Image (cartoon, rainbow, N blue to C red):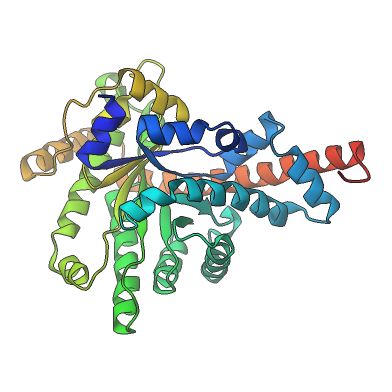
Length: 369
């Protein structure tokens, strides 16, 4: 049995952190679904920028839309929705079979809205309505401005993938926003089943401390420790009276999602984070390269623990980093801030790439198709 199937049987969903038109048209994504137990996918601006830059799969669509007078974000969201709607249809049987727990795809609101709550709420509603797919998450960052947007979007019935979470505290803030949205729906007599995932970024912790810590502290330990601490909070929340009351009303859990699980350290195992974060009732969204590596030689050694003994061990590891001069709370805030800036830069690069391609394609074919 493939390691990917073992993870699936454990109760963890494997989602591909990639989407290109080539993956769809070649049948590769369909093969990953049937052979590697992939049950969803996520996208981001960097993924689309690389896909548009490194292939000609989008050329006809870009040229046609440019000739129709479309550009910038308008043109991009049309391209992205075309891909993600097709992907959502591929995953729809999984979505239906699992009662909406699995089988999701994700589309991000413009990262330029990260500090604008009202605009984020409006954009999330519009994008979800345009997709006309029940299994499409809208990605909203778990930033200061994003938290109220998450609550309002959930209350409005928009499924949300909360992104850019880097700590237990970030996760708890996102989870509480989700629960407030559901509680408001119940009070208003609305269906409490609005799906959400909360995405914790893992490997960026270890990249951030690599040049600040010495010896064993550089061995990719902090990201996993932060993830384990967050998993404990997730399990505690699911066992809480507040959540149990919502579940009794028909709400479904906001699942914890491991993001940024590709290994950045060339000296480390290429399946390090996937193996370390095997846990039921979670999602792992992984790069294509990591998926193939895990399918080829990955092994599930242990299931992520969340008992008090292991929780104390995790806190001891994090305390060791504190003695090394690393403040995890300050670093989480820094990573979230830098993540938002990185997403905004990727967005600008994406729009610049589309503009460059649009100009080249329309000049080469001035009359359209």
